[in-house]
Every structure is written in C-alpha cells, then in structure tokens.
Length: 254
Image (cartoon, rainbow, N blue to C red; front, side):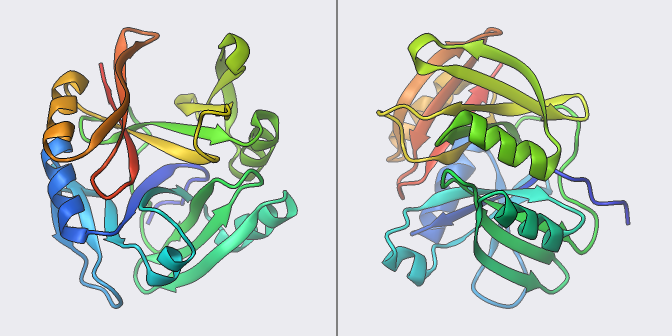
C-alpha cells in the first residue's frame, strides 16, 4: 500500500434523485460504464472509465432532500489523516456536515468551506484512487471553485491541502481567476462568485472528445446547456450544463 497523498482529487460522487436515469445520462454523454459496489448500506453504483472506477452515484438521502439540497456532484480530496484535516478545517472557519467510516473503503468527512462550498476529505483504507498524470478521456480534468471570496477560499484550501498558486487571469469586472495545483500539476481554478452565479460550489469538468457533439447528446437526453460550448484560452472548449435530475456538470475538450 502506497502512502496517501495530500490534496489529490481522487473520487467524484453524484447524489441524484433518479439512480437509473442518472446512469443512463452519463453513460451516453461521457461513455462511462457502471458497476455495483458490494458493500453494506444503500445501493451504490460506481462510475467506471475503461474499466477503472473513478467515482460513484447514489440516491440523494431523504434528510438532504428535506433540507432542500438539489442533486449535485461532490469531489473527494485525499488526506493521510482525515481527523487532522477535519480539525484543521474547523480551525480555519469551515464546518463538518457528516463523518463516517466505511468498512474496507476508508474514513470520510463531508466538509463545508468558509464560503459554503461542500467537499469530502477522504482517507482510504487501501491505495488512493486516481493518479497525478494528465487526465485521460472520461476523467475529470478541471476543478473549479466558485468561491464566496477568492482570498478567503485560497487561504483555506492552500493551508488544508498544500496547493500552490500557478497562473492567474484578470477578468476585469469579474475579478481574478486564480489557477492552482500540486506537485507541479495544474488542477483547476477559483474565483469570487458574481451576482449572477450559483452559491459557492465546486464545478467539475469531464474530459470528452468533442464538447460540441456532447452538447447535442445532452439536449437529446433531457439535460440543458447553460454555458457554451465556448472556447477558452489555449484553444480548448467547455460547456456547463444541468443533467435531467438537476445536478450541475461541466465538459471539456481539447
């Protein structure tokens, strides 16, 4: 068993209101296969990319629905010590939503950053999922934080996970878009939310072969395209959308 890295995006979980419908949508849009996790508790389906599990999908819990939570994606960030990460998150002004130990899987702590964006700190029982190399088709390629306040968010995450600033882009009235990474690899960007943006949240981009072709499939399957397809610096293309169950997602192609 290798040492668990700190601050790797290693698992991606969709909490949805329609387990079968969500599987059908992402199978066709992204090309993932699905599998069934043979553990205890409610049904848990894994997202498999060319046979490798990269995430999962489960029914949005009743208590979350009662609290008004929509269907949503949740990123998992690895840590060698989930207790220490959780305690530090609280010291830095974050909050703890839920903690649990999953036999043969590991310890998880669902956390809220000071601005309100939700993520999971994960200490795996075995080797950490994911890798630190360039993303392949069907993997998550960019991790974008719409922050309550960029500087406060940066102070929180850089302290908690050791991320480093890379480049930044001045977007004029929209403010600074700050890129960040770890171990020399760029992971994503973060910015202060504007008045027309959703509440603070993580936006997770999946690498596909052609965003324009994917946009057509999204609409055919009952999803909606909110932004794009549009070109971004570097000659790449993105779209941001809403799946049929109401979860926000994003796609990226080169």
